[in-house]
Image: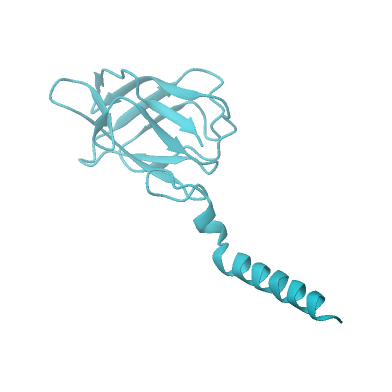
Length: 136
């Protein structure tokens, strides 16, 4: 093996080693709301003083979710009812109601935002606005 071939082989070995050391599948995937796209994303649903629904303390906007879906809860333990339009493609259906944490299950939703049709917290409707989910 010539000196030139040895340097090429050494360069290739260093490149592959560097690529393997720095490539971590968990790090290479974008984070969704601070969670890995391979994890279920927690969403706190509540109502603000003006009667608007909030997700994770923020009024309006979409929460990014990965394929495993989301889990909803109310920090005060109130019953929350969530309704999506028919055909929402969430594994556990388009309508949810519980006082504890519950999960959407895996999602087949793939294009654009998935807005909430309605949300009730402790039996009272709140204004949904632009709240929803979006697949990432």
